[in-house]
Amino acid sequence: MKSVSIKDIASQVGVSTTTVSFVLNGKAKEKRISEDLKNEILRIADKLHYRPNQVARGLRTGQTHTLGLIIEDISNPFFGNLAKVVEEEADKHGYSVMFCSTENNENRASGLLTILKHRQMDGFIITPTPGMEEDIQRLGEENRAVVLIDRYFPGLDTTYVTVDNYKGALEATNYLLGKGYKHIGLVTTDSEQVQMQNRYKGYADALEAKGLEVREENILRLTFEMGHDESVSRISGYISSVKPEAIFFTTNYLGVFGLEGIRTCGLSLPADLGMVCFDDHDLFRLGRPGVSVVAQPIEAIARQAVILLLDQLKNKGVDMEQVKLMLEPSLIKRDT
Image (cartoon, rainbow, N blue to C red; front, side):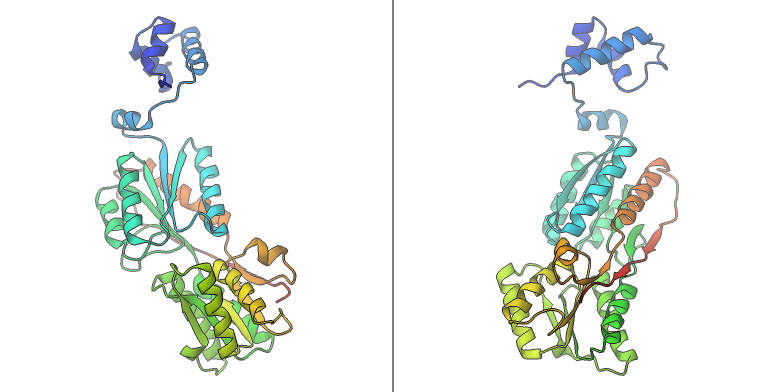
């Protein structure tokens, strides 16, 4: 089906394409176009189901009112909810959002960023993958608006919104210690990124503060690419061999795999094993027993990211200070 153009609207109304363009771009009053004519043009545009070509508009005006959101995994409830709130907040300010998942793959992330740049995004909200430092730095050099979320690169001076991962992990481990557990294991990813390293440090510092040794054999590191079955198998094998009294899982998807691994071992929570997970999940909230978690303020992260990005767009060309925003996580105590 052929898309409707400004020329089609102009033909039906009997005016020039320039007049139609002025009306559709909100310049009717500025160009002294009568209210009756403006309303007729808008009526015909609606009748013909006209949709503007954002790329073409961007080439003309330098703005498409579209934001690019690059996240790690849209299927993960944390990132899915984050994307939803970003979309809602952007819509309040007249922006649409185009989002995509990197699957934590550097090449995929760079390719997606290139595509979004070619589609004339006004700005970018990005959960960066390892190795994206040059891509992020280049965005800054190109004077593009960009905000990082969930994680950042310590060596780059960029605006970001994250949570205090160290504090969240410290509180989670102290919570388990307070319940009398001493042999506390850690199931985490093999990522060297700052958010995961801070979660590890919070765990380690909590143990050391109690005079407990941080032993590598008590730590299981899984790769992001590892599939469901292998992850569950590795976790159940770890539980059987290490025999921890409690486990701190550093991400919600690892925590979900952990529930399966615990069941595979024939153990139950909290009778046989204590558990806390960083990031909430419906299974942790609705399941029985409920799993204690470190919850991130998803709505605040998303809204602040949009606000900071729009502030950059509003002040484009102005030398602005990069904002480093670290929000507080909260420990939600449930049955485990």
